[in-house]
Amino acid sequence: MRLLKETAGLKNAGYANLSLLLPLIIIFLALCSTAIVIPMLSTSEMFILIFGLIFLIVSFINTDIALYLLIFSMLLSPEFIIGETSGAAMRRGVTLRLDDLLMLIISFTWLVKMSLNKELGLFRRSPLNKPIAYYMIICLSSTLLGFLFGRVELMTGFFFVLKYFEYMLIYFMVINFLKTKKQAEHYLWGMLITCAIVSFIAIGQISLGGRATAPFEGASGEPNTLGGYLVLMISVSLGLYLVSPSFRKRLVYAALIILFSIPFLYTQSRSSYLAIIPSIMTFVLFSQKRKWIMAAILLISVCLPFIMPKVAKERIAYTFTQGKNRRDTVEIGGVKLDTSSSDRINSWKVASKVWIDHPFLGFGVTGYRFVDAQYLRIILETGFLGLIFFFVLIASLYRRAYVIFKSSDNVFEEGLSMGLLAGIIGLLVHGLGANTFIIVRIMEPFWFITAIVFSFSGLKEDRLYEEKPGIKEITSAH
Image (cartoon, rainbow, N blue to C red; front, top):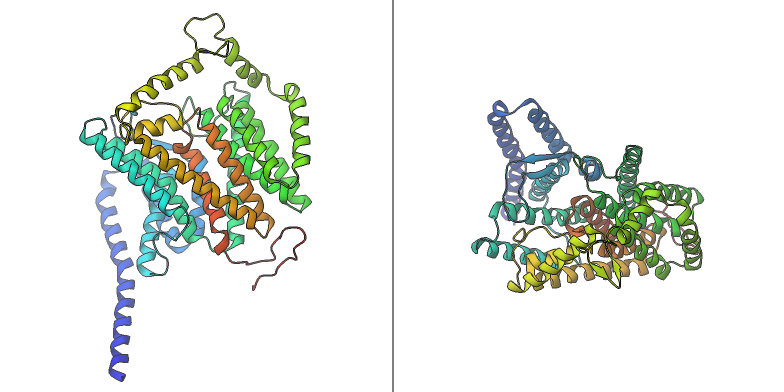
């Protein structure tokens, strides 16, 4: 018996030594690689490398800090064009952003920590694991098939599929690292502060003319992207506002909603204007204050023509007036649309006829030319199977968020889950006129918020926490 105990002790000691040895080996290899690479780098690249190494150390020591940096980099990250790719959907360098680097480093430290602590696990169980896996398998299969038949340039398709998975990797990382409700609330406030910074920057663009866009989006920018992001953040803020019993917090949420709405109107994004309507109507269905919401909607509808910026009104009117006397525009219900909308609809008509050439798995990711409509792009790239599994994923997400909303026992859970439900509806409508569910500045915040909501049932109470009115507040064990 004593011999068995000694043997077990030696084994445990061996595992402990191995656990200590692995990080040392990784550090040694990282230092060797750095020594080889440094002479080949420019000054700017050297700074990026130094930042990456510092962030790697910080991530390993404190994942919380790393996730906060990721939150702020989602919308405030500069872009870098690296290399050249070719393909039907993309004929320019691969766009990399600071958050891509942060994601890579956090993922690396995650794998290292798993090797040291077997209890962490790679992917924690959640209702989305299977739908995500099935959808990613379809994306990979269609892209490889497209490459084999010459429709997809492998490097381009690989980077785009990797990008799709990166968004969902955020979900898995947050699910794994999130431990307490206080931590979840702090992450959300980090996202709201980031959105406030983005809104102030966008408001600063108004005086320059043109359309409001997110920072670091190049010379032209993507107003539609900012519009979709703000639809999500306004929905979240409104959900929290409607359930908060604290007057001070309601005041803060109201101020944020007003702040986010200003650049939203100046994006002049018609897809975003359309998306915010069903998003707000979702609160009429789910909120206990539906009468107040309907009264507020009525009041805003009456006041909107007087308070809406002139450029926003002109943008909406442009849709129905610019193409009046033109023969090359599309007519719907006796109304001629503008040239921009007409060109988009014509491209949809062509694409909707072409997808039947590869009905089940599509052309492959990036295998068909750019189409600015989410659902048409999915069916073109991944076929009918891809579209089915995409909607299975969204339906699973929505159903689980609804269950969490109905069973929530405190106002933070209820407000955030209701805001997510409204955001999902808004983004689904936004996807009619944009590639919403593959846009990095929309999907990264979306999956982060989804992970927070889906983590609620497993989080610890670590402070006096606000519950729903009528339920006695509970005090944490701490």
